[in-house]
Image 1 (cartoon, rainbow, N blue to C red):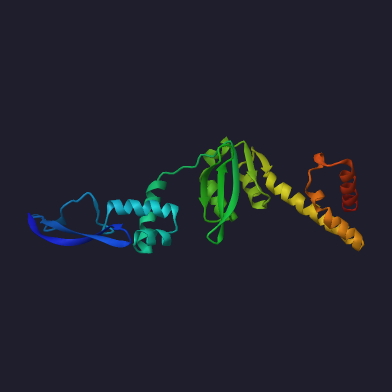
Image 2 (cartoon, rainbow, N blue to C red):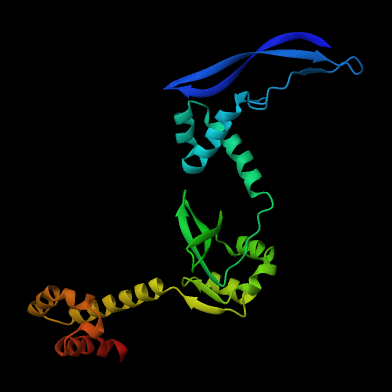
Length: 243
């Protein structure tokens, strides 16, 4: 039976820069059997957060693309509300999520929000598969242990030069080909080449050092594109280092 009504405020999407509130007259009903009081059902309102469902959806999508602080400012709501809505949205979207490792799996890390976050991707499609809050071995072992059923599909395991990834490869992808990302190999080669140049230059007199400084572009050239003169000069520089 009806049991009076109550005016309840619900926050809605803002109008320009001003927070917007709706005052809704909610009808109450009282159960004759148990005495419980309930409100009429209004499908466009979120009673948990006291906001409209269209505002909740807008905040959830903003929180995916923006920082929570920025999303809160944009929608003129509290940052804590943005965090709660995002956590609920993420839990719903990730429910039942399963990682399907591709034939060519790439693992790496990215510095996000003050820490190295583990990222792995399908190298052939460029699609990011998952991101973890850390790249420490304990976190990685726990993660890959849950997905061992999918690891047999992987034929190539691509990583940087961190030994921890090699450990993961040996434990969970032992039958795949281990490949070190070319970027890291080239970077290490460039560092070694630069050290060789500095060591050679330190042995020269002042005029020789000035001459080497003017010819610094020589060390950025590819071997196959060099003249015979440059190849001989590079060989002379690297000779003592190799010895």
